[in-house]
Length: 433
Image (cartoon, rainbow, N blue to C red; front, side):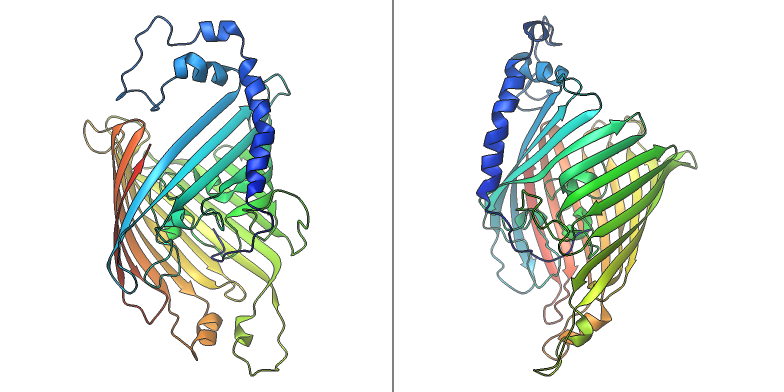
């Protein structure tokens, strides 16, 4: 999904803090405007509050305030994640390291807030810190996604999503504004997870396509006509992580993406399939001209594409939680290879939820990825070094002792794109509250 490059910041990082401070009085006013009867009629009245090990969130229902705000159209989700990862084998510093991250999601329903029907506003704010690096061992893709994303924002508060949405009936929805691309994968059982959930490696969190930046600015249209769904996206080709304005939007070109998906059943098991094509008019480096003699005239190359096919199938149905179980997932893609740094890729594996008896919240995943890098790019690097295709395997297991607490163990093997480096083994643990 992502362009594996760090784009320069367009706006100071403190712009997010200023923006959230400006919005906070609105959120507070909405909260103060909750009718007293709504608080008086919360579901917890007259019932014993759930214990700390059975309630959905660590903070509980805030004395009924959370439910009351939800009834009025405001939902707040806050989670904090701590990481430890060690380079078990491979080139580079093998010292273990720690990092941390906090994510805040704010979702508002404009209809319940008394504004207009079918609308919503959405904010995803992130703060990350610590010394655990995102890249290790010569790997092309971050082995610790949360150590890199959001881009250029260590020890800063960043709003990676800040957009409005509007529903049209029960079948269509439009999103406009600044959108964290990983947010669009939140409901997936295999991909997604921001690196705070499920896999750590970017190849699984958001498979790089060479034409989609981590944070986009533009519009997304989804339309469902069961069992099919159509998705159309138009967005700026540059990463928008630190940008909060529409200045210079589309100055560097435009990206267009069209996707068609199907969801249904095969052999009485939940299944899905989809195809997505993305094209960018932005200029990029012409890899075939890299390394020409000094003084040679070079020109950038314009136009890049990526076409991906995705499949999913539930292999084993969970005995305790219908719709969940052990599933098989795969995504294969082709790209132009110049200026796109990729030519072909494959990412796939299995993920299980509610498979272990009497452990309905525990889940796990095992995945494999392979990225065939552009031949022109490899030839361009050949005079000064070795750049090869990158592949890797990752496995994680998550133990959930309480609905609000997730403890994960992680193991990765990566054969890095840097041909001078040997294969890498990494182990890590993660706690999310």
